Structures are given as C-alpha cells and as structure tokens.
Length: 333
Image 1 (cartoon, rainbow, N blue to C red):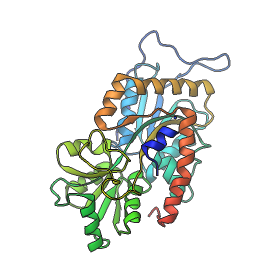
Image 2: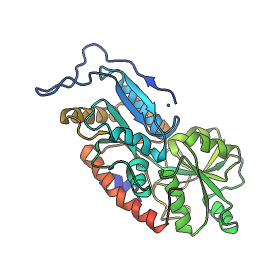
Image 3: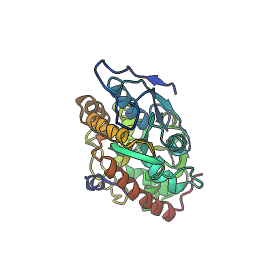
C-alpha cells in the first residue's frame, strides 16, 4: 500500500468557467507549433461534485483562470470509479485543450480491478504532476455509540455481514481501504457503493449504513460540525487536521496503510512544449500561498512529484493494487 514514505521516495454537476488572462500574459509558442492555448480548456472531473477530485480541480481551475489566456470549463463526468471521465481524456489523443485530475481510482486501482478497461493508464496519457495526497478516514454517524475502529471490528465479528460501510464507488481508494481492513482482520463487511461521496455521507448521517470510508478533504467539514465521527486514518502518520484521531496502525491494524493520490494529466501525444508548460504551471500553483492555504484547510498535502516521478508512481501502484485485489478476490460488483 502507498504510504507517505512511499510518496517521498518516489522524490462540480454544473460547469464553471473561470476569468480569462490578465493583459500582458503570453501563450506557449514554438517555431513549429501554433500558440497555446487558443480555445477554452476542458477540465474533466471524473467524479461527482463535492468530492476530493472536484475540490482540487476547482481550486486549481480558479487559480489558472487568471493566467492562461482562455477560460477553463470544469465538467463533472463521473462513473465507473472515475474511468468514464478518464476514457474521455484518453480518447482525445493529441488534444492540448483537455485535462483531468487523475487518481488512484482511475489510474492505480480501476485498471486492475475492472475487466475491459477502455484505456491504458500509462500509454494513453501524459502525466504531468502529482497534485495532492491525503488519507482515507473511517467514520461513523456523529451520534453513533461506536467509539473506535476496534469497536467496529468487534461488532462486525459478532454479526458477520451485518455491518455495512459505504464508499463513493467501486474501485475507489476508499473502497479498497475498507477491503484492506476486512482482509487484515479476517472480518466480513458489506460494502455499499455510491455514485460519489455526497450520497454516501448523507446515508451515513441518516443512519442507512453503519460506517463510511471517505476522503479527508470531503469529510472534514462534517467532522468539524460533529455530524460524522472519525475513527481512524489510513496513512502512516496522523492527519494534521485530525490530530486526536489515530492511524489504523496505531489502532492495532498495521496492514491498513494507504494514501489517496491525485495528479494532473492530459491525453497522450500533446506537444512537448505544452506538457512542459503545464508542468511548470502546476508546480508553481502548488507552491502558491493561495493553493497551499486552501489545501491545508482540507488536509491535502500538495504534491511534489513532476512528470517523471508521477508517472513512475502510477507504474508502481498498478501491480501493488493488483496483488491486493487478487488476494482478496475483490470484484467490481
């Protein structure tokens, strides 16, 4: 599983348009290519509004709205664990005006979990930069009597299959973290997949499911309002925004260590100078006070891996999750 240490070692349903470039900015040009960008940029979010991919996409799209000279239009295209949106980008080979936030779900887990995946997670994309990382959080309703991950496990062992946990969809990192917990504790849970985080959280707060595996940025506001109660986080260190919540390792489940990772990707075959421009721009955005402040409030650590490092990370994650999926006989049902 991917931990913070591994990363270091590797070095909304409506569209929204952002303001255009201030006077004086220039487009990318070369002796052999036309200026770029020359038309609005489609930013594909392959998950529903309000999820982590959507949050990061809109933050960055707003940031770039004043810098690139063309509007950025954010489009939510959820489905199939993020693969529907990814396929849109993959099929736009050579198109320099379409981008996406790639993720562990669409590029690390889905391609080895699902059959007949319509794209190659490496060959069909130009991976530009790691954008952010954060843990999955095991949570229960804010009024639940369950006070710890251990108590939840004990309940599941007493009533195999009766304890349900939701996630934002099959093939997501949050789904797999739940499976890791079940495998490592030899416990039977019933997974309830939703079409995104919002309906999953609504059902948790409404009492329709016992627990939820959710990304920290998506759930942080509900933890602050105490409508949801966090029990454990999936990384090997505690989350700065949840300092009193133990890691799974600290809670007695050392095999449950994983990090949600999201990056910036374009179709394969875009002009090299456009890829280099994006890499420079994304790196600068992630170091900006504006983005750092927004990410910090949500518990997102800005990514530090450029194109080569991020591509290598994806290449390492694919066999890692294949091993977990095979060992657990996990199916995308």
